Image (cartoon, rainbow, N blue to C red; front, top):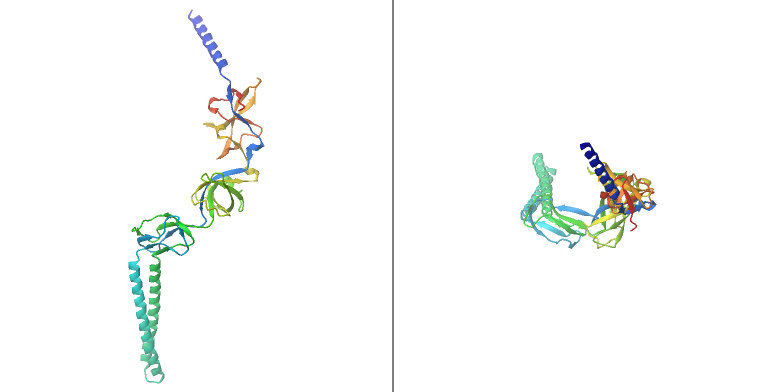
Length: 357
C-alpha cells in the first residue's frame, strides 16, 4: 500500500512540474538587428578646457603677503603687479647697498687721484718705487671694492623687485592659493595665472588608440554647459609617456577664439579613426550582462514555431563604454540580432517573441 502511495505522489508532482513548464510565458523582448551601421570608427573621450598658457606664480623671496591687486578673472596686462610682499627689510638692504656703492665710488676717486699724483712723481724720480706700488695696490683694491658694491647693489635691487609678483603675459588670475597677511616662503605657489589666448583641450586616450592619433587630426568638441554647439579642434600634441597611468595625454587646439569657453569646463571629444583596428560594433549598454562567466549578450535564433525565437547566450569581449554604448571587440557580427532589454529574466534557450516598438 505504501509503495502505491509513493508512486502516486511521484506521478502527481511530475504532472505538476510539467504543467508549470507548459505555463511559462513566452516573454516579449526588445531587440536590435546589427548591421554595418553599428560598426563605427568614432571614439569619444572626456576632456577639460584649459588656457593655452597657464602658470603657478610664486615669489622668489619670502615675506608677508601684503596685498593682491586683482580679483579672480579681472583682466591684467603683461608686466602689471599682481601681488606684493611687505618690502621694508628688502628696502633697508637696498639702501645699505646703495650707500656702500657710493662710499666705494668716493674711495675709488680718492685712490685714483692719489695714484695719478704718485705716478707723476715716480716718473720724475721724486717718489720711490715702494710708494708707487703702494698707491697702485690701493687703487686696484678700490676698483675691486666698487665692483663688489655694484654686485651687492644689483642683488639687493633684485631682492626688492622680487617682492612684486608680475603678470608674465596678458591674462587673468584663475586661482588664489594664499591669503593677505600670510607668511609666504620662496617658491610657494600664490596665484594661478591664465593667458587670454586661445583655449586648448586636454584629454587622456587609452593605449589601444594612441598609435592611431596623428598631429593635425580633427576632433569635435561639445560642452554640456553649452548645449547645441559643436567646436572644431585639431590635435596639436601627443604624449608618449603615461606617467604611470594606463592612458596617454593629448592636447587639442581650438584654432578660433571662443569667449564662451572658459578654463576648467568639462567636455566630450569625438574623434574618427580610419584604420580597421579602431572599428568596433557598438551595442546599447542594456544589451550587455555580466556574471562570473564574463560579459555576454543574448542573440536571437529562429525556432520551429512561427514568431517564436530562442534567446541564446553569446560571450563577448568589451572595449570602452562610449556615449553610444559598449564597444564589442569580439563575439558579434553585423549579421546578428541581439536582445536589448530585460536580460535578467532570460536564460540560455528561453523562448521569446519580439516587440516591434
